[in-house]
Length: 325
Image: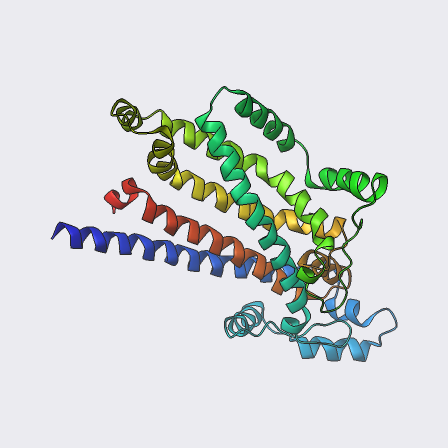
């Protein structure tokens, strides 16, 4: 039956995307492990410090398995990773890495989540209105602002916001020093400047893509036919333009979320926000390889997962891809 064949083709297409994501995750894990094992210097000596005795360095190297073959070490690390064991930190109290990064990961998730919850609806609204009102004052203003913001990096936007809202008009804290296990949502004043920085820096790209997609959808023959049939303009926008611009919009939101994973690191360092970005900087400074590996893998897996979800969503909403399946 044609319907069953189409359904099987759709499932097979989704399974292929999942398979590619799994292979990519495996390749990334190898690259992360290889990159962190070829860092210059002796990890054991760096962890123990200058006053460490040769015997202590040798004992730590033995404990870390640094004398074992590379493939054996990688497979052991990969097996632990699959089981959810991220290893033990080499610095400080030698805490399990999963416990050490739990709070920074939560803080980063709160920052990124708050940004997306505000950025995506705002950018979609402005992009759709600009596309529907192409050439009018709103469209020209949105195009000019988004084009300007595209050329301004996050740290410049953040610095300007600090000057404006924490120095000249001191209504917000200049740094986001959320202490201990305090949930950032309970101290929203520390989130305002980082979130605002990310929204301003990230909205421009999404607005442009949504605007272009809306313009293309509004120029199609079926929209013109709906107008000739007397369908109200608001219904045309919602039923035809928005629906048929979903696929590129999903990909644009995915790209924005992936950009946010990198942008949030810069903003965390700029505002001293206790997230994954600052945890990674600290780990690099003290050569805490297990923490570096864990954060790098979490970041890579987040990229892969976002891309996978966007691909599957695009397949489900795009009739051309469903037909091809």
